[in-house]
Image (tube, rainbow, N blue to C red; front, top):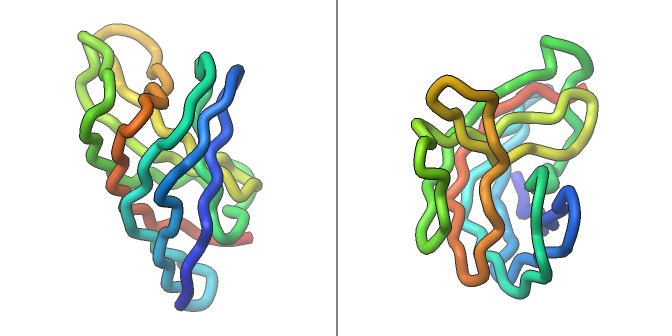
Length: 125
């Protein structure tokens, strides 16, 4: 058990987390993280939005996991149907993205003072 100080990376531009602590419990290779982060400052953030994880996930298709998150004060896509936090197999990063009607998923938007309440369980390498 512990606390992970999360960081945020964007495809382009920058965004930083103001509140950035996520609790985790690791039993064997299974890790569960939970908590709420808040985006602080932003500068033209765009593209893939990723949050750091306390441990790298398993590689390949078996390393893919999906969890849930709730947003508050965040711009969402008009045709977004559901949001998901997904592991980036073989790394200590997770993607925050929206499923969309009839289109590929799109990254969530780092919005200043936006909140992300996260729950994710994944397998480590």
